[in-house]
Image 1 (cartoon, rainbow, N blue to C red):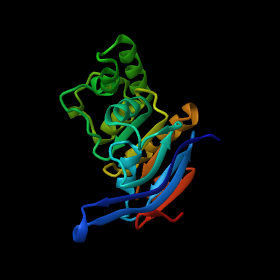
Image 2 (tube, rainbow, N blue to C red):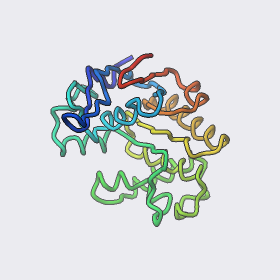
Image 3 (tube, rainbow, N blue to C red):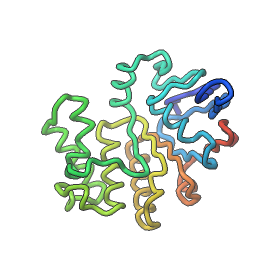
Length: 225
């Protein structure tokens, strides 16, 4: 397998002096292309900070981070924005959809940002993704009218819109009932198998973690397993 990303000796400290809080403490890890990995650990262990750094939304206090052979620490904000839009997808616990937009408009949004406009090809891909998510009859529904499980499937489709190499999922099933959580996880596993997309899924759900190929445990700002 080929290494997709690698971080070494990551430290992240918030604040300074007596109020400084060290969240990451020399953390190192790598992800291979096509992995389906779970990120585990207690609340406050540093998982969310790590995901934020891997998503290029924040830089560490120190350490190195390379993805697809590019130095994410040396890159400037404009370069990171372009890289993130092209190569990284996000699925959040609260889906973060635009409520006044339809399911299709939400899914196509990342492509419209990238291209500067909404294209027929993007709309066609968005429709195909929503059909794959089992939402063929909800494509033109405002997302405010969808159930929690349906909204999360729209969020998964949106994350995949630009065909990213990496999808970061932060508690993607945390607000779903068991049936909906299982359905979302089955979709992620299917996409991982069929398209080779790499997933890193932060979760407290043992069943979700068990469905992943690898479990990465973070405790006190470092990887322990």
